[in-house]
Length: 330
Image (cartoon, rainbow, N blue to C red; front, side, top):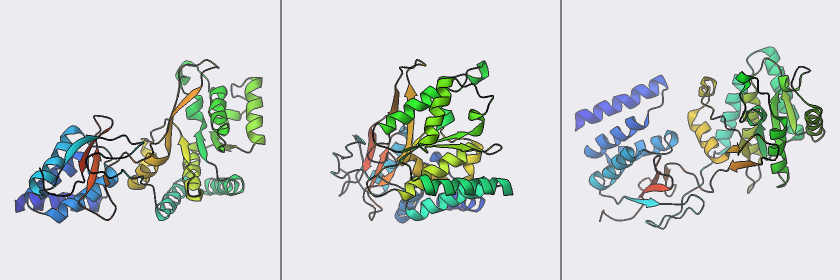
């Protein structure tokens, strides 16, 4: 009733004032409350807010959404299997969308990264030098988090060193597909004390000649460099070209929480590529998990209709709740 709706409103107001993001359970509970209270417009507003932060929903949350649509909004909702590569939904005959950042959101993200990286005068100069280098040598199609690739399958705490050969195989994989990679790695990986063979040093010299390596300075976090490069390349990309960010780092570190969650999640969903090597052998080729053709995230079925939605399951790959069928529940 009205009391429950009032409590839900207070939760949203407090979250807004304290600049904290609500959790999946908060959103689904409020959908139930607003639905039961007959606040149809507020349900759609909450769905828009939720879609920016909660990309996939648990089975319990999907049931809460289904109930809200069928019982309280008198709209259809049914579970369907959708292949995100093909994108077509058999229930409503609509297709999933590919949702990327707008130019203004990319600019906002670049400004945020820039502000965080330039913490002091030296750091500001170093980051400006990097941006100058990017504009002279970029844009790149693929940005590679070199240390993350090089330490894959390694245990540095047990004396394992970075594999330059692994990094090279990732770089080559993209070059063979006519893509222009940028490799970002901290300067300590190229110092005199770095554990490098003669063959490793040859690879590094080749990367330098090809202008695809950027060695980040001491006392700075290389993460900000490769993240800036990836977002900047996305902004520069011509229509039809896709920029990839290769890393298994899920960016859950505390310092990434300084970025706008909404913008970062949206960018990561479209551009992030996870990689894998079966073993440490020199013949082990990398394999990649590329972003799907369509966005696997809660989304309006058509941008201009607030009442038609698709919700992907976090429990079962390929399962979606389609709330995008015209007409009353059957």
